[in-house]
Image (cartoon, rainbow, N blue to C red; front, side, top):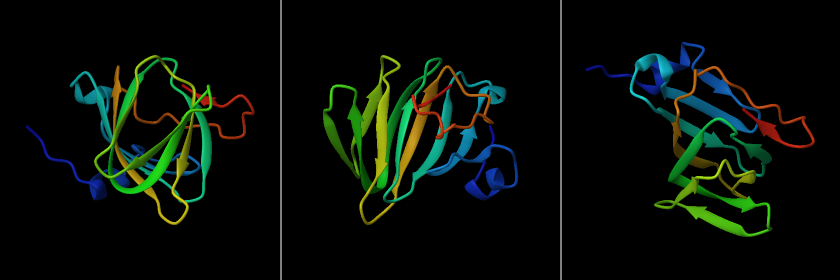
Length: 128
């Protein structure tokens, strides 16, 4: 058993500024659990085109608001208590709220190494 805090992670390479927010990679591949858990902040008034080609992801909103848009143009508002699931390696837009950050618990399978970073300058979207 072990305990790890957000402050613990901030002192390591597992704390990632991904461009439109931050990600505390609380559990990673090296922890041997078979999945990753992140505390993810999506800054207000930001948008990112993302895709996880090597991972499935589920995100549970614990604070704030934002939205996810699929490639068919369907927009899904995300608020506290909502979960969105990218079960088909879905390419998507992730947006922070108009007035507040979107804060998520993000689960990845298979687990992340923990140091991955998005390239938000890629016109076709960031992927890893």
